[in-house]
Structures are given as C-alpha cells and as structure tokens.
Length: 528
Image 1 (spheres, rainbow, N blue to C red):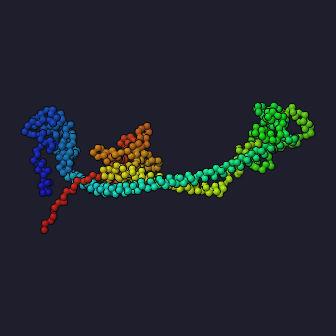
Image 2 (spheres, rainbow, N blue to C red; image 1 turned 90 degrees about the horizontal axis):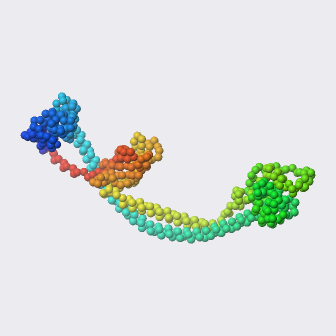
Image 3 (cartoon, helix red, strand yellow; image 1 turned 30 degrees about the vertical axis):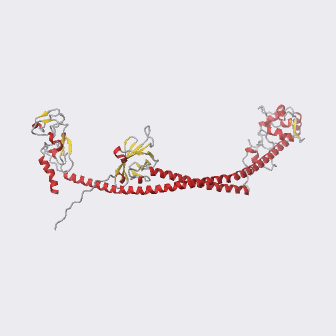
C-alpha cells in the first residue's frame, strides 16, 4: 500500500500530458488537438506555437516553459516538496530556482534535485509545529481548568468579603460614634486649659506692659516730681510725629493729650500706648523680673558708651536755653548713635512663659481616651477600605474577558521581559507595556491595556495597548501584541514598524488551537 502511494505521483506525471511549465490545474487549457487560446483571451495561435520561444500572447501564457515572455510564469512541479511558480525570465538563466531543476533544462547547468531533502525538512518542521501545538493545547486545557477552579474560589471569597463588609461598616459606624463621644470631653477640657493659660498669659503681658510703662515714666521724669512734662518729653526726638527729626512743643503737648504734663496713671493708661513703638530707652532696664533682657529689646544699632558728666558751665547753659533749644538738642542727640528701643514683647522670641503648660492629669486622661477611640476607629476604617479594594479587584478579575474559556487568565498577574541591545521591554498582560534603557533610566510607557485586537474570526489573537507616553511632536505610543502558540510563555520579539507604534510577539500555550486528530498508528508488524 505504501509503495502504491509513493508511485502515484509518478503515475500522474506520466498519465497527465502537458507542456513544460504548465501546472496540473491549468493543463486542460493546453489541448494539442486544437489551437491554443491565450488565457487572457487576447488571441488564438496554432498549438505548435506553444513553447516555441516566441511570445504570441500578451499575458505570456503561450510560453509557459521558455523565457520568451518576460511577464509569463513557469510552474515548478517540485515532486516531494511544494509546487512553485517562478517568473519566466528565470528559465534557463543558469540559476537553479526549482528544487527539481526543471527550470534549467536547456542552460547547460546541471541542477541537483533537492526536493526530497527539502520535503523531509519541511515535514520535520511541520511535525515539530504539530508537537508544539499538541503540547500547547494540552497545557491550554490545564489553564482552562485552573481558571475554572480559581474563578470559583474567587467568587466564594468575594461572597465572603461582601458579607464581611456589612459587619465592618456597622463596626466603623459604632466606633465613629464612640470616637465622637470621647472627643467631646477632650475638646471641652483642652479648651478650658487653653482659656486659663491665655488668661494667665494676658495678665502676665499686661503686667509686663505696666512695668515697661512705669520704667519709661521714671526715665522721662527727670526732675522726679511725679509727672512728665512737655519739656521732659521733648528730650526724646524719636517721638517726632511730623518727620522733621525734632519733637516740637506742640507735638509733645499733643502726645500728652493737650496737657502740659501727665501723672504716672494717665501715662500708663493713655500716653504709653501712643509712644511705645517709637520710644527709645536711655538706659537698658536691668531690674525687671521678666522677661529676660534679650526678649524685651531688639537693638537697631550698637549701644553707645555712657557719656561723661557735664561741667558746671555746661549745666548753667543748658538750664538757660532748655526751653528754646530743646529741639536742637534733640537733633544733636538723634544725630549720634541712639540707644536701642523698648520693643513690645510679642516681637521677641518665645519664652518658657509663652509656651502652654502641660495638661493636668484629668485633661490628659480625656485626651488619652479620645486618642484610643480615634486609633480604633481609624484601624477599622482602614480594614473597611482594604476590604472594599479587594472586592473591587475581585469583581474586575472575575468579570474580565480572559478568552473564550478563560485560558488567558493566568497572564493577569504576570509580567514578562525581553532584553535587546538597547532596551528592556516589559509586558504586563492586561495592564501595560513599557521600555527602559538597558544601561539605566526611567521607563517609558508604550501603552496601557485597551482591548482585544484580533480580526473578527480570531479576536483573541492580538492585544492592543494604547495611550502610552507621547512621542516628540507625534502621537502617543501604542503597542499591538500578537499571541503565538508555544509550550512556554515568553516575549519573542519587539519591533517598531511605524513611528511610535510597536509590535510585540508573545508565545503562550493559551494561543494554541486544537490540533487535528492524529492518524491511526500503522499496523506494520514482523511476521514470524
């Protein structure tokens, strides 16, 4: 039987008579008993003009076995391998184009018939592909079963999480109520503590202000008669109000509220507030209990040395001209380096006195109880958010289109890489595609999951990833992933056929089609 099968092609070659270069499918057009009609219908010629090395037909169909027509075709039978059409121009050109050598019948070139060897290699390749397909399809069925079980488990877990979510929501609301109840006495105690501290702080500041006012009053009261007069106030030209650098008698009297002098009480109540920001102390205070000197003053210039005592003549001249030249003396004093001003306490750096004291024991107990309630609430809230996220992820995974039978589901949580000379390409199926320079650098997005992109009859043969990083003055990058049958899951190639459009090939058992049934084993056996 095997011998008969091997002899059949030889029988067909003998029985089916046809001109050289004509295929079996076209032999009926070449009937030597009647004229030949060009295959394009353009003309008819006597049959003896077929293969006469002269081109009669426009389509070259009258010269299938010669090189006369440059647009003709020569058919290689290639017995034992695949038949092939070649251009008529290659006939007898000294190059063996047909594996059976029939195209070089009159060139003087002897062509070795390699069809059987090519056929053998072709069959081996096909057998290997068939074996890959069979093994891949076997693995595919396992993947399908694995997804069925995993899907059932995920559905069961989803049901449990959804049931537990309601309990967690109730617990969160209960802990929220307990937290709010614990925060009420905490807030009241903290507010009361702050209020008492602010009152104490205000009283302390008022006391310091009073001490500063008293000190300034004593300093201004040169004759120590218990009152500050216009003349005494004029000794401080820095209190000038019209910007001419001298405190006139009228300006001084205005500062005193229209009076010629003021006592200590009125000075503290009315005058001090109006002059405190400009007033410069003649001598730094050293006996104030609080705050420390650095907190009370902020020197504008370096402190000058204390001047020596004036002579008796200078005293007399000063007494005679005190009222007339008081302003000029003020200018002379102002032209020299002046002592630092008394600055309001709030501009100084905070002291220990300005810091709120620790909470009392009862207030701290309220704070601790409220914090414990907050911690429990926040922990329960985090647990609820984790459960909600798990539910969303499970719902998305369960409802995702992983192929006709879920065979591609195993790719969902995996990533695969391909390293080339320049880049490392990374594919995370159903998520993203990226590339990163091999020698280091930030990854570039080549697209995120879009959809299945195969043709209508084979939708799951390709994936589309879209909206990647934009190209310079170009579109956003995108990637098409072709899925090929293989026993292993591996990225085999990545190319960029068009600018910013990438093509990647992923080999996976999930892409293996069901192979045709294997032929029954031969019944050959040795006879005894």
